[in-house]
Image (tube, rainbow, N blue to C red; front, side, top):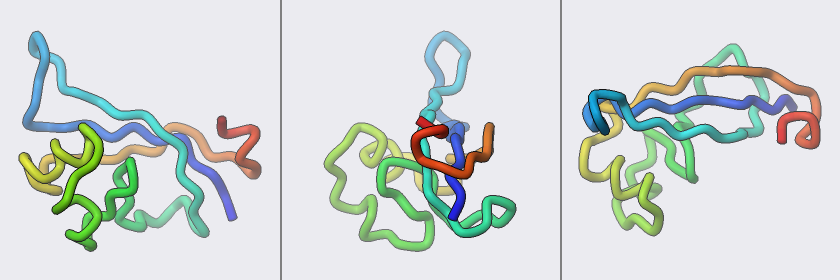
Length: 84
């Protein structure tokens, strides 16, 4: 398992002309393959992870749709400690 530090960008919501972003850490088997995770427990292929939102990020995914979000990998680490 590997740990990635990622940046998820909301392509439809801006503050002062700048897209809103979310930075997080995610555990994944292969960091080279997108597994559908975009942050805060949300997986793009599992609507149940955002249809009943509990966090501001989940509310945004429900409002704008999963296609409005783009995840980019910033760093890849071998341990959670290093990632955090």
